[in-house]
Image (cartoon, rainbow, N blue to C red; front, side, top):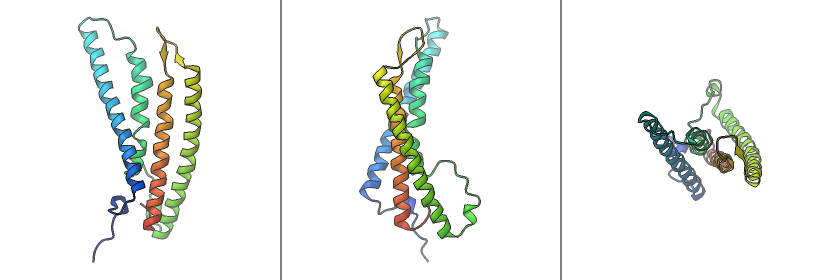
Amino acid sequence: MNAPADPRNDPNETLLDRAILGLNRGFVLLAAIALLLMMLHVTAEVVARATGWVTLIGTLEIVSYYYMILLVMLPMGFVELKHEHIRVDLFVQMMPARMQFVLYLLSCVMCIVFFAMMFRQSLLDAWNSMQRKETIMSNFIFYIWPSRWALPIGFFGLLLASACNLLKSFRHRKAL
């Protein structure tokens, strides 16, 4: 007897599924570039200090307000699509398949609502930060408003990923 197809590796995925996956892969690529830049930047800072050169101004601020935020926020949608977020489903595993399916759909709907609210609020915050040209206190003028846009982008990716998982689960009539 053939095993049922795994809906997470669906050969019949829709164009929308592929578009959302492609968008989130692009976000992962941007996060990977930020990681490489951070590694180069911090390495250059360490080498500069070790050789007696002056320190690279703004390393701490750039790492804290740009690289780290990009690393955390951008890949979250991809992680959701791959079902790699932490799950606590000890009791759910013991439930009948139909109940697992219903609970999964409910959790997807709750995620969509939550991430839509987070997307909206972070978008408003990023817009306001940009309008004010938000800075932080430092030895120089350091603009942080551009990094505020990573949050709505990340939440948008999560919102789309949650919607994609909901539709995929509904299409297969089983929890993913």
